[in-house]
Image (cartoon, rainbow, N blue to C red):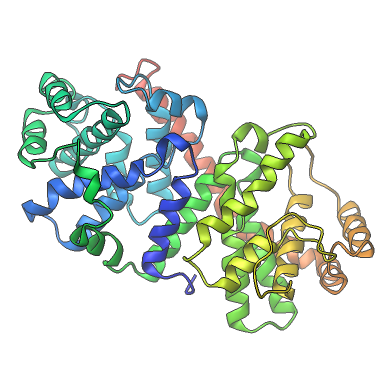
Length: 419
C-alpha cells in the first residue's frame, strides 16, 4: 500500500461511493461540505480533526448497498433506515481510522432525545450529520432554502436540538447556492484533501471500502484478501522484485472495486446469469478502471483491470494504451481464478484439489492462462492454500463479529426504530 498516496485514497473512496447508486452521487461530499462550512469558522477543531469529520460525513452512507434501503433513505421524511446506519458504523469501527467517531454514524438518523448517552461532541456531530444529510436531500427533492429553514424550525427539540438548529442557521448556509462553490473552495479542499493521512490510514480506508463491497455477499467476504495473498505469494515465487510484488498486491486489493456498481442480486445469483446480467457483471472492470484512473500508477491500473483478459486477447476489458499483458496481470488472473475455485459461491460449492488442478491444466492448455504460472500454482497448491487460510481467518472472524454486533444492535433498537 506504499504506492497509494494520501489524497488519492480519498479520491478513490469518493469515486467508489458514487457508484453505489445514481441517487447518491456526490451526496457524501456535499454533506461533508455543509458540515465543514458550519464547523470551520468556529475554530473548535484543528485541520486533522476537521478532515476526519469531513471524511466521516462523506462516508456516512458507506453501509448502504441494498436498493430497498436506499429507496427509504432518499425519501425526505425518512422512515426505518437503521440498516445502513448500523453497517456504516460497523465498517467504520472495524476497518477505518475513525473508530472513535463511528458512533456518530450509528445515530445519525436518531431523534435528539435518543442520543443523550453520547458525549457532547458526538451528540453535536451526529445531529449535524443528520441535519446536513437532510439539507442535501431537500435540495435533491427541489426544495428551497426558505422551505428548509421552515422545516428545521418545526423540528426543534424533536428531531434536532434547539442549539443545533441555531448553529446551522447562524452559519449563513443557503442551500439554494451553497454547492456552487464546493469544488472551488480552496480552504475546504486544502483541509479535506491535503491534510496528510499516514500510510496506515490510507491503507485502512481503502481496505474498508473494499470490505464494504466484499461483505455484500457472504460468499465473497474473503475473496479480495485471498486474491491479494495468492498474487503476492506467486509473484514472490516467480522472483519478482519487492516493488513488483507491492504493485501486484495493490492491484489485487483494488481489482474488484468496480463491483460496487453491480446489483447485489447479480452478485448473489444462484444460477447461471442471463446474457444481459453477464454483461452487467462484466461492466465491473470498466467501473474499476474509472475509479482508479488518475489515482494510482498506470501499472497498477493495468494489473487491476486486465486480469480477466485471456492470453489470446479475447477478454472483455478495454485495452489500455501502450501496454501488453505482463506477467503481473497473469499472476493476478490465476490468483483470482484460484480463489474463486477454492471458495464457495452462490452458484457453486468449494471445489476439491483435483478439480481445481484439472481446471487450471485445462485452461492452461487452451491458452487461457499462463502455463508457467499455472504449473507453479499447482506445484505449490498446499502452500498457497495454507497462506490463503491464514490471511483469511482474521477477515472471517471480523465478518462474524460484525454480524453478531449487527444483530445485537438491531435487537436493541427494535423493529420500530426506537432505541
